[in-house]
Image 1: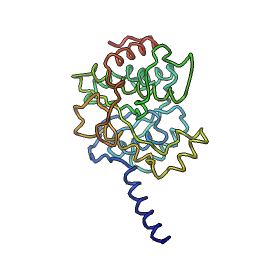
Image 2: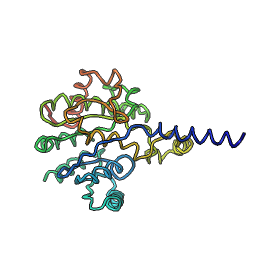
Image 3: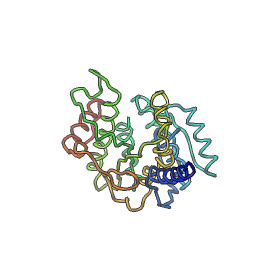
Image 4: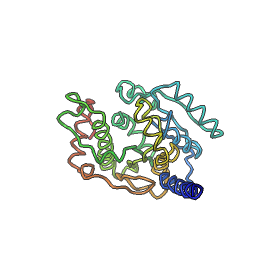
Length: 275
């Protein structure tokens, strides 16, 4: 009886892992001559995305806050992908000065970085912008009265709001880039075993306990890769994906008025004009 139970458990575990792994990018497209800029690329989904794009011939720039960890990731990628063209650039998306310095280096917060690089993306068209959001956007709302959570702060609410902002940014940017041959899409990578929870003992324990139900970083990177290379998405923009397929967007993420209002508020905070 015990043996039968173990056999059933093993079969169920295998099927559960296949289910948890989600979709896989099937495209074999090459990216020779293309440049892929990946933020947060020294670990998890970002690093696995970098590995895949480097294997397709792209010159990959790892934009990392911690340069030392970025260099370690670059060495690992080069060891895994023979002849990989990988370089590391310092970028802290929480520091506008760092973003501007990075953009200046690259040319000669995601919003400002895209703003500073949009001219280059247009000149390099066809180009793609891939925004990693989350299923958590379903539980977010934009608190325009306290956009930067200066009045009160809750990490969970702030996370959901940021992921909703990713979706709204994607849709508004797609509208503004219509006809430019630059596309932008957002995605939900799935629940991934990554270092995101490394500073929380409770979350680390929960992730370890339910690891069977979680994606590996490589599995979690599949939709990012799909949005970056899939031939069928060449002219698709302003959409949301999960498991390499179109995904549901919450009603608050489909509001053109909210998207435009958030766009204007972001420009005001950064002191820029982006018509």
